[in-house]
Length: 137
Image (cartoon, rainbow, N blue to C red):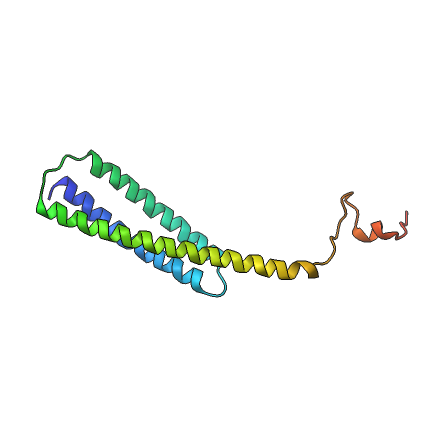
């Protein structure tokens, strides 16, 4: 096999792994309660795969290639997978926006019930600022 075929095969493998990671991301974003550490791990894995894919793309562009039907078929598969992943990523973005909106709504509900601050701007406890007597020893 030639160098370009190897690169395209590696890109296909990385794209398949990226789909698995993005499916996990979508599953995590679809549940009622997002596990932050799991989502962070997924994001790091996705970033790593995207960096590898970028490296392979740079290698592909620097490789001399001839018009070959096998190469064209491989490139068509890569193009289709990339389009599918683009759509999946866009959907995951919408799910993430929904999670952010729900979190903001929850915070808005909780804010009126928030206890007063424990410490004032001067660093003293809030009760000391309410006219309580200070006792020195």
